[in-house]
Length: 108
Image (cartoon, rainbow, N blue to C red; front, side, top):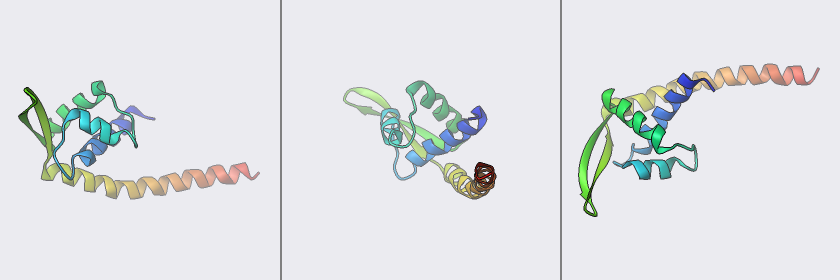
């Protein structure tokens, strides 16, 4: 898969993971695991990029004597999820076209 496409998909996946409630790194990875494998070394640059883009905010809070960063989605982050949903309709249409072509060639 094209690295830029995958990057965009992972960004939206991370935003979706914190859409309903603030979360922290380990929990985000755990919540995404049934759908997509993501490592810490991949997640944290995504979180920094999304923070720079103002799609999320970060708040540190003490947990068991250690500071834990909680990530909160912003209205801009919610907007990015909605944009993705709109774009996905077009992507599905393109996928259907491509697979239709492949199915036609398989029948020959």
